[in-house]
Image (cartoon, rainbow, N blue to C red; front, side):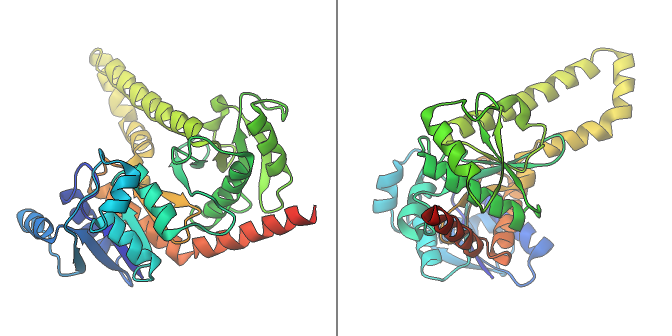
Length: 339
């Protein structure tokens, strides 16, 4: 298995990327080859400075870098010698089995759509994020790649999310729900009402109806579907609330001697909650619907986040995620044609 890694992508690149790659090789590197793409001089200097052995990796020198401030379309078309563009081109040409980047989400989405392309039945890939919830982790998509969606796209997202939940998250017959402002199928905009009917009639998924935002974090379902605008708001609001609540609890426990003693009794549990809410535990968000596995790590990822993004990429390849999605989408299209 060959995994391609954008060494210069992200706020903490290349140090975090190199350390994360080294940790991945040590922890689950059997049968896996990692290729680092980026400024070779900078990569080797960073590795030497941080005591990272580059022997287990192949290094592909790239003279350009796509930054967070670059226009996504222009950067993909003009920065062809960047790790992001060159890596995805290698992925398309079969020179790798998966691609991981913590770089610009917009550029990665555009480059994936233009270079790697999508499986049949998907117009644009969706960014999917795994969120911690009360009963179990849930998959939320789209989280920001497609701000405006047609009903057919939301229906496709339901299939993509269901397959990912089965293949990567290990869920059997995952329950799929549509974010809406009410549980009734008559709720929402015309787009969401039409999407509800398509999802309801979709034979490839176990659709359980609408879900209100307040119920998402219960974890009663496996997959939550929405457009990229709604998904990004849900994702960032969840992250913000979690951070605020943990900060408030810390303030409460530091109030006086009694509360500090009480803290000692619950310290382990609070630590577990903090780890659950840490995006680096998951590592990255897959661009579901891409013809080959593409994983978007958080832009602020440290080594642990990169390591876990590589782990996700490995799981996607092992489970033939893209091939399974193509088969599920073909089944959906056939059923709709018969209707």
